[in-house]
Length: 237
Length: 202
Figure 1 (cartoon, rainbow over the protein chains, first blue to last red):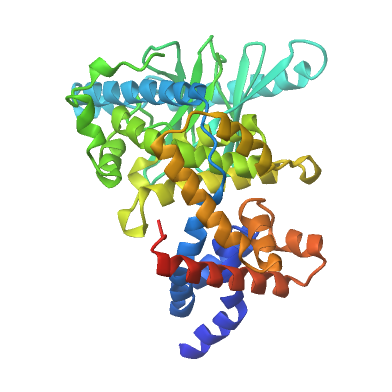
Figure 2 (figure 1 turned 135 degrees about the horizontal axis):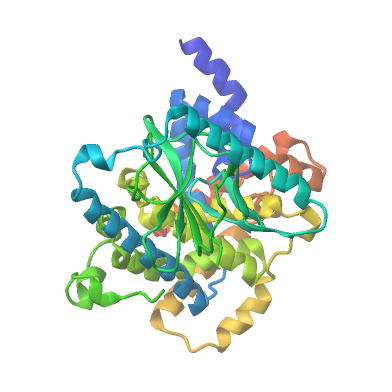
């Protein structure tokens, strides 16, 4: 309805410039983006003003990036590219049904649930006891692909958990799976699958000296080798 | 882990560098590390400069640039050429990451780079043609920003480079939010007008 669009435009029309400049707080940004999807006038204005905003970063005084930055970035990229390649190769080998076999298929469902509950209980207990003197906790912030999500790997003694905030839901039919990677080797399943978007996920048995903790989206039931690019990467070495 | 070039069969060094950004991104989406490295080489300078301008410290700028480029590598499939150039896309990601980093920082701890200090250091470097061209481009656009009425360039800089929200800016300038929004729009309109005739739109 034209009347609605006009009303909406009266309310949101002034947000075009602040939105382009990144000056709207999250809630207002989301509201404006919903409006923008249906408002031709705002979209037109966005495309008129966008080139001005796109020129702004070029006004920053040129500063050469340190060479170490490139080394760090390409180090991660190279190892992830290898991982991806390896996953692609091994994904071709086993027959489809075997590859998709859930990790805990060999456990009777009741037992699996019992073990999971035990792991959570141990994790919680460890957490409570650990608050006192020993052993000291360590937190490592992870790289997360999704702009507004964050993840931290928290270890205390041989307990470990992944703390998440603001993760998007995994794609339909998928779950997130946690992997442990030991220097340059293929990542192994950490035995933790999750769907939660915020909260703590226990890594059963801790990190076992892994140098990186990865999270990928996998077919529900989990995979034995990663089949997609990691969405969370934490260097725990 | 060392980045092993021999594992790739992309042919001679020059093969990738002759590809356009958009073509490279197709390879990046398939997990080709060397294609990503070429993208990094082409855009790391302007990306790091933006991060440094926004964050004000080298260490935070490095964190932001690293986060941004790794997310570009991991989400390469999401680049959509219909929505603009690779450079614009890369800079948009750096900008978002820097804003996130700034908003995680307590306001009074925020420090922004004073452009004068950088100027000197850059002057002392041996300049290549590419650097000279980049520097000239930066001067041109900075000149356009400086040519705006001060109240307009101020709100644009606080928002875009400072990462402040419109209400923070309104409080800082002791002005109504509506006024801040209006100055942003006017400033961008003028800037757009200055860009167009000279064909300086990247």
